[in-house]
Length: 308
Image (cartoon, rainbow, N blue to C red):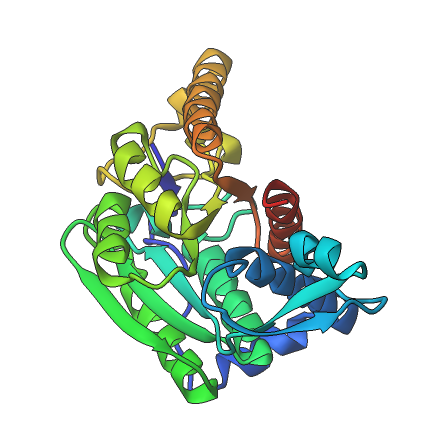
């Protein structure tokens, strides 16, 4: 059960202002540099041995990556020799976004999960634009799917973010992250970094095969937006987002039901986390917009270590 205010939530209205300019105003420079540096590290991992053309042999000099040393050639020549590659530029990233109505539910901080999704997409787009990367979008739910090819530049990023914004609403169809993962699988043959944005209950066990296939073809990381429980808000009235039904105050006030709801949510999170570990997929759960950037940095750092 996911909670929303009876009014239907506080979905952020789209404006004519630049989304990328707004996200820039919320990020301090050291934070941006740290996240961009970790993202660069992920690109090196993703494209090691992929998307690079051999250029020449060259003598090793201090500062070169020791991973580029050709040990056989070095032994033959008696000196360290490296293999130089032409590095592929404008690397591709894919935003895979769950736009089901569950994303209109409340996050633990009191805002909607949709607001956290928007900010996460804003930050990814901002980092991609700053690095000159290409960014694609696959967004969808049980009835809708939107796909936008990978391109770069401010105008493309702003358009992509507006499409996400327009789909995040309480009237949206139910979530179906499997629909989104399947479209990424069929649409992208080039190895990419796929950033999945969904809620903490997804991908579920029913999506394990799709996730396994996606992981063998692409680098995958998942940003999960935490759910608020109806019992988190005391005597404040809430509805269930999936079923238009008031959650009575006497039920929300019962400590035994609150404990049962927390236990159920924890078991659900544990099942999802175990599945992700089985397939080497790094994920992070985000509770508020305020902790999004630090959570993303932790995620990139963990994934960089896992890729070594």
